Length: 256
Image (cartoon, rainbow, N blue to C red; front, side, top):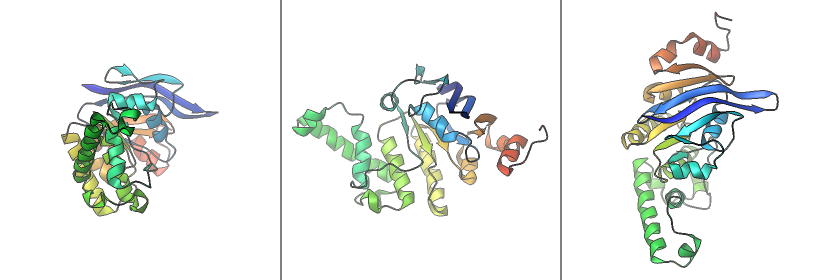
């Protein structure tokens, strides 16, 4: 089943075309990677998919529903969550409280119910706390639960943000540079975390520079260069693609 369908998406900034007529699918149960040299348009494409930016042309469908023109909160309510290249945690909250924020985003209790400590709101708060504890364990960072986000190492901050995204109970999660700031041991643990996320029934689309991680964990890879899609397929095919090699080496391909 096709979960995410992107067709002909283009996004310009003045005279610069950051994303140029890009189409691709992400199927249910996949881990798909989006890679490309710096400035290839990866983050812009992510923003167009999740509603943080609006494409000038093209369509984005998630589970058969159009996303273009809808607010990011709508995408979250539909089951599409994301993280950011620069972590966006609440520094004055603990890791556990940050993940609870994600869990609370899917609850129906309103402001007044929460403020008045009504039974419905209290029950949802308890559920959010339990969800946060479970996801901190699932991502292997439960020991950091009571640490304020401002005091977390960069790599742990990224894992907290992943846990918070998962707390919204998504069917698909988009991860922007999750391995940035991680050492080799943490990166290996992230590989296992991504597999666990997929095994838990969550489809994954990941933007990542760490080629070792990408090649190890991805079912398919989409490659952008200068805003255009230049290759798409399984890792072994992408490794041998001359256009991909040329893009990363900064050389001209034989085709000119």
